[in-house]
Picture (tube, rainbow, N blue to C red):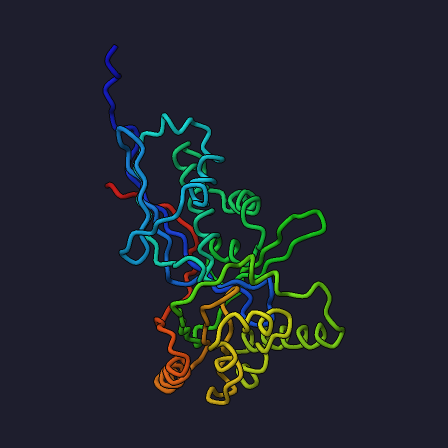
Length: 311
């Protein structure tokens, strides 16, 4: 018996999911900021299933059993993989294990791919609920789903509450991405289970002051407001350059520098003096002989979205 002739079943589409900077100093597991680096997934109707994954133009080889995108897609798309008649091309700017929410991007992208293939409505709250089954930290997920600057809270019953807050347009963002990898699960194991009261109080004070700086756009004391004691001191030991970046007197008091997620990437929030900031970072990184990329990024206010690739 001859196989039934294949015919195109849907119009090609792509999914864009923005990367995210999470924690932002003292906002551990609660603050997230979507930025203009993207996890792009293109899907085309095809006679048989095809899959490829590239990161910044280079093939990204991830064993199938470790590929979170494929795991989530198989779970969310109730059709046997033997009957998958489409080709998926992932071209991401979000390098894995860099503290930029790459796992969250992959999970969200897979959920949206399954929803589009089943002609389901794009419901951000449902995407968030489903994504949390795979990615247990709401800061990255909320920022990438909704876009912008988000504050996330997990209720006693596990329900996730999220609010989007205006991020000051006057603030610019410089992203330092070292050629260094850190696994989130390993970085989290370094954190203690209990903290002294004075540490908790200090973090609460700084978090409140950080949010006030953003609200009033008054950045006096901005650098002090991100001097976290909950996660950054413990994770800094994984990166030889971290202490110098966090503690150096080179940066002004109205410039905030933070570990993005678990690291090794860092974000610098500033208004002016970009040339001197770049020069200071170059001097610090050269001491430790670690290659890096330094990129200007902006806030992505739109969040995860689906776009047609055909008219």
